[in-house]
Length: 248
Image 1 (tube, helix red, strand yellow):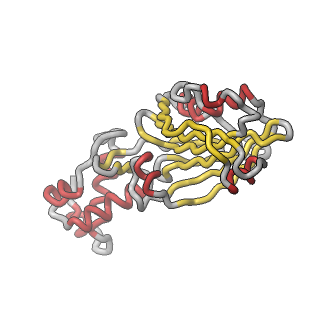
Image 2 (tube, rainbow, N blue to C red; image 1 turned 135 degrees about the horizontal axis):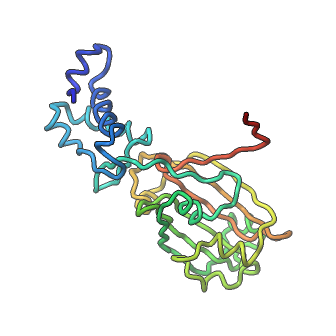
Image 3 (cartoon, helix red, strand yellow; image 1 turned 120 degrees about the vertical axis):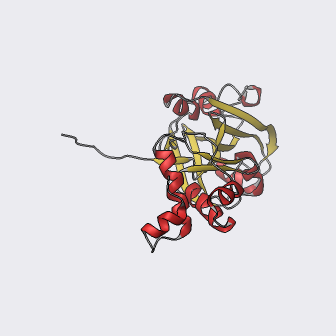
């Protein structure tokens, strides 16, 4: 395995951090470092390769941004699994999506309570400001790695037993689909930098961008729920396909 300095001699125009990146990629693509394998830390790369800490940091940071590594604050950097994905304009059950990939879904309930509707929530649910609403905040994980924060407000009239559910074993999507059959949905997708509390729940760095979906769902003429779904950008992708696809 060539050291970064040897790669530099092979290509004088390549920066040193690119050599570190390539060396790590070679080990990943060869299968020597499989998914979830812990890669050397910045200090270990400095000691093993004789590069600066700045060079090692940039190599690891760029590989994380490119989706090759997952960096967990305070723990280390790990070889990423193939990115999970979610159907962009479908209201899918994240537990089913994860199961379809042959992976394990886990859910951690952070908040499950009745609150009063803020002006923003009241507008989204088409209720009066201050009206009672149900609020759930859940972190969904895939094979032990957090992949989504689901921050949801529910119209109590549409799902009166919402707070009695065990959302560690049943997703809100599964319950609401049964309690108030879906008739329509609205999606708004945006890039977002995570807030500090979101970083802690997703175990990501503050500098890591996220994908955010604001979703409202209807049953008949009534808004059932409004949700903000946050995905770490380097662990998840959103997909959509429309129209007919003709294949030979």
